[in-house]
Image 1 (spheres, rainbow, N blue to C red):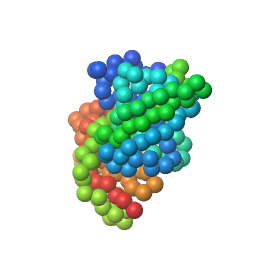
Image 2: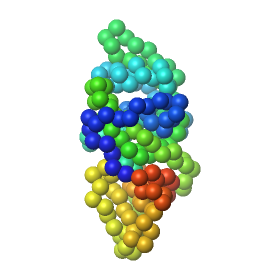
Image 3: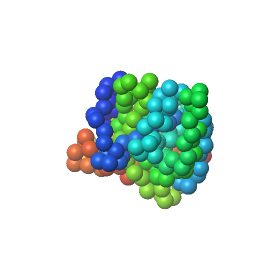
Length: 205
């Protein structure tokens, strides 16, 4: 599940055949928190100007909260935003409007060349209707997993990645890029290079 290295060229993408690959918009605020929430912003960074230019072919992008380094990791959780309005200004900035359409998790990520640092991500779709638990409950679950043989993997592409020797087809990921919640995901596959993720639970503070 390693992410591509920054600056490495991504494969040629055709949006009609790769609907689960989108550009990523990072923001250090909870502009949206649930499906249906609306978003509006003025984008002026060169990479996001490039993103807006490409929204004509697919009016969607990933909203990914990030309060640290403006990059995403495997297992980070965000929303697919469906664009409802796009307006350019003479200065080159873009005003956008849209709404949160789907809850998703990052499967892999890279920086596409010649885009001024625009990140792209392949994502997994998640079930948004899982019952939330408290942070203390998910911490207790995490502690119990470690005590029953789950091992932390040194994976630079993920914030937290757990495996168990007796179940090699299962990987657990922690989506901890939000300030008020975290997501525990299970990635299930006989092929570790192409897992399918399921949302196990969402913990809220």
